[in-house]
Structures are given as structure tokens and as C-alpha cells.
Length: 270
Image 1 (cartoon, rainbow, N blue to C red):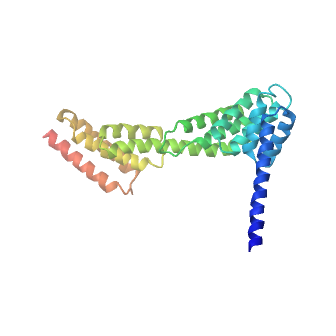
Image 2: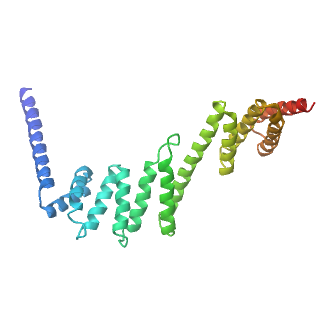
């Protein structure tokens, strides 16, 4: 038992020495001036998927090799390493930079595509700010304009659908949110704008119903001079809703709004 413990401790100690020695050698390589050795080591780290060390070395090499042989490879491997480490912001910047520096490279098209891909991966969930989603759409559209025959077009179209659906969901939730907090005029206007922007949305049924409901509540809370006009709009909205969704689960409730709006209009006229 004592022998096994000794062997175990010896193994841990030996491993520690090896790791420390390795770290020391790497630090000397980073701080040294043998750039050829740095380049070879960086590529080897990249090929072995040790991207953390590869990144450190490529960062160290970029300025030294600027405008020289291997500059293109260094820029490419550096961007690829950042992407592999899921640092999509930095990777996207480096791919765009690669495209600008080496526009005639056989990798130029791929670099621009990967720059757009990095923006896609940065796009957050629909309920968060969608600035990066919009930027990703712009990057993809710019790529398609430049390379309409690219092999990446099918994947790009899939990603564009996903990104646009995210924006659509965000806009619907904002509009519906006004209804939930009883800001009925804002809800009506926002839902109407949503339906204009996305006439074939999967949220069309809900949007039309909550627009009708918002219109009714807003109309009933209006001054008498404007109530009739606004309630008549509810009647019109119901006609469109009923024609579009004859079997809707909201139909009975929509019918109730319609009936009450008609009764209120009749009362105002009398």
C-alpha cells in the first residue's frame, strides 16, 4: 500500500515537472525572436487543436510577417483558431480583415462567408436585443450579392430564415406586450404594423385577434366623439378575422367583442 502511494506521488510530481517545463519552453518561445520556430510551433498547435497556444503565437507573428511570406497563412490560421475557441466577435473581425488584405486569395470567399457565420453565431435569443441578428442578415446578404453562385447559398438561406423569424418573433412579442400591460392604442398600432410587415406570419391569427381586442378596449375607453369610429373599426377587423380564421379558437371571444361593439354603436346612434 505504501509502495502504491509512493508511486502515485512520484507520478504526480513527475507530471508537474513535465507541465512546468512545457510551460517554460512555450513562454520562452513566445518571448523569443526566433519567428520561424514560432510559426512552425503555431501551425503545429493549430493542427493539434491546441488553439489557445496557437492564438498566442499567431498574435505574436502577425505584425512581424505583415507583407511577408506566410502572412496569409498566419492571418487565416489565427481567424480559424479564434472561431474554434468560439470567440466569434474577434474571429469575425479577423476574417473580414483577411478578406480586405487578401482579396485575390483562393480563401477570400470562404473568409467572407465565415465572417458572416460568426455574426450568425453571435445572434442572441429572440427576446434579447437583436442588433447582432440584423448585422448577421446584412453580412449574409452582402455575401450573396458578391458570390451568388457560392456553394454556401443553401446554408445561408436556411440561416437567413432563422434570423428573420427571430426578428419576427421579437416584433410580435413587443406588440403583444403592449396588450398585456393594457396599453391598447400602442398594442393596436404595433400589431397592425406587425401584420403589414409579416402578412404570412405563423403569428397572424393571434396578432389579428389581439389587435381586434385592443381596438375594442381602446374604443370603449375613448371619448364619445371618437368612440363610434373606433368601434366600427373593431367590426371591420372582426369581419377580416372571421373570414381568415373560420375555425379559430379565438373566434367565440372575437364574436363577443364584435357583438358588444355593435351594441355600443347602436346605443351611440340612439
